[in-house]
Image 1 (cartoon, rainbow, N blue to C red):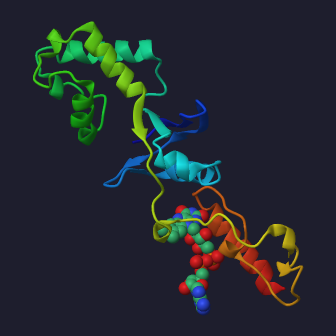
Image 2 (image 1 turned 180 degrees about the vertical axis):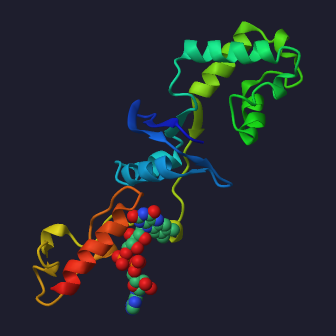
Length: 204
Ligand SMILES: Cc1cc2nc3c(=O)[nH]c(=O)nc-3n(C[C@H](O)[C@H](O)[C@H](O)COP(=O)(O)OP(=O)(O)OC[C@H]3O[C@@H](n4cnc5c(N)ncnc54)[C@H](O)[C@@H]3O)c2cc1C
């Protein structure tokens, strides 16, 4: 999905932990993609995250149409419904959503997939619009460390001389890359950290 808004909420505290805009993926195990990977950098440090995930208290909310308000999206759906008024509901969303997402949305909307579009009630349409703006997924956990892309944690930067990358504690020991307690969003920053610190450590 492109140009979606994600927001992650702590249901226990009724608080938003993270929000982002961009790309995400539905996978066979759940969700992934750039915005989701960035969110995990925040979640991993969030207080009592393991317990909260276990207890179904962390919710992901996806807004598939963040550029439109509820009212604007409703108008947009109405326009599509007008165009496809004699089609079955299940065949009326192709302008709005990627093909693979349509059966999921149709199912969750609880509107009869074979209902003719011109028979869909205002309440049903509202439910559909609400679903597109607030698609909810309860997060159950992280993927295993073997699949991790970046590691949070490592040797504290307070213990490293940034001019040389030498340890302040042990002379002649130099650090570079992932072993250092720095991590950044996906998008090349971590490679940059590895190259730059590696260059400095190597030259020193
Ligand atoms: C799937 C994936 C996608 C990624 N995508 C991005 C991205 O898009 N953008 C981004 O910025 N970062 C990305 N990263 C992260 C980035 O690749 C790492 O941050 C970076 O490569 C770290 O470099 P490094 O040299 O510190 O460690 P590494 O690249 O892990 O190098 C460590 C090396 O040490 C070797 N080694 C380990 N133990 C020993 C030993 N005992 N003796 C000898 N050698 C040993 C390992 O075999 C390895 O070759 C991605 C990582 C993964 C896994």
